[in-house]
Amino acid sequence: MTTLLVAIGTQNKAKTSAVEKVIRAYFPQASFIHINVESGVAAQPLSSEETRQGAINRAKNTLQYTEADWGVGLEGGVHLIDKEMYCCNWGAVALRDGTVISSAGAQFVLPFEVASEVLGGQELGPVMDVFAKKENTRHNEGAIGIFSNGLIDRQQMFEHIVTLLVGQIMYLDRK
Image 1 (cartoon, one colour):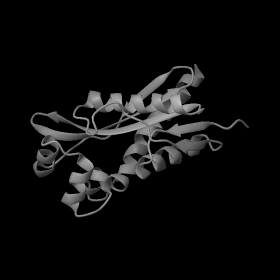
Image 2: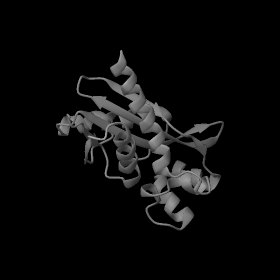
Image 3: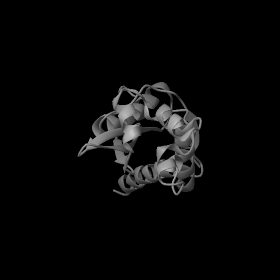
């Protein structure tokens, strides 16, 4: 059985756990490496397009620095709709043949007191740490865990995105 090597473009625990859990469910022979790569976008992406581009860049960059079969990039960002700030989340997978697939996940509104700090130039992760009086929320429940009252956490949110990506790869393999 051939091993599938997957490079994940981050060390963030919520993201790496999501990728490993989903891909192992469909490809038990997969092995993983975590590598910090540049997103090529702002530390706090401020649009859905910029967030998507960050995920794509991470996915592609993992393949440049590894011998992996697949490169996976996940990116969280924010965007404005009707003067309200929403969290947005994107994932991408880059394959050795040049194929790049992207998918988006859950979006939810941020309270004004959080949004105003982000609009003021701060990253959402540290803002959430102060808001929730916790440490490393971006590696654990994330903003979605706090604002969904724990019904869904950041890992689960990214699992949904990775499942969409894997499903699209499986569809392409059927053609």
